[in-house]
Image 1 (cartoon, helix red, strand yellow):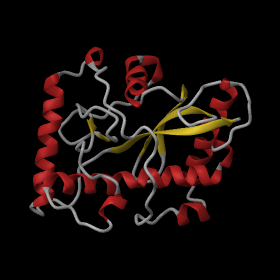
Image 2: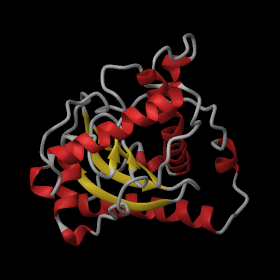
Image 3: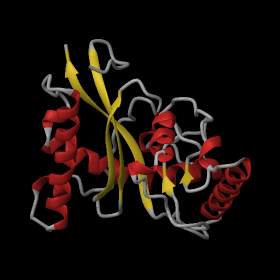
Image 4: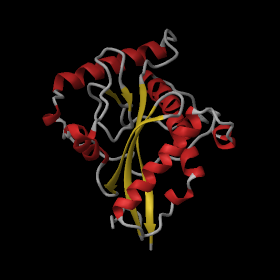
Length: 233
């Protein structure tokens, strides 16, 4: 049984990639709940057997990720120590380019938050998993993602997808999304130059958003890690 950060709870970490249609294109389940998000990414990406789908080459194809991950080639993270969550902008507008960028980033990432909202609403077992074996719990999680994708791909008229279709829905931030970034990327082919390239791109996009020359960030997929409660005692 994996222990978690919450008192009296155990967690399973699940990494998922979602496209613009709320369809999950990659899922990796079964990691211990206390694993740092950056470490989880590093372990998954470093093992070719996991089949992690790297985005196509630069310049304009990358995953949106939260601030627990490095801002490096293929992964675009928000500015740290700057307002980010949509709820943070309800009472006060973005006032500089960093806040403009973070607000736009959060608006785009809101789609995957809504996708996870549909998944959890449809499959309440994910929030309180019976004490099955770890392997069986992992398979249950993957099966839930498969059902989610089937309903969406077959365009089945579904109340939950309709309910979560509004971009105006705002979700609470997940645990772990203020974690410090772990520098575990040296063995993955990422370099300081890769980080600088993405930092420069982020600055360029932030300036475009501030000057109203670009309304949207150029992205391929949304990338996000979430944590499911698998057992509570």
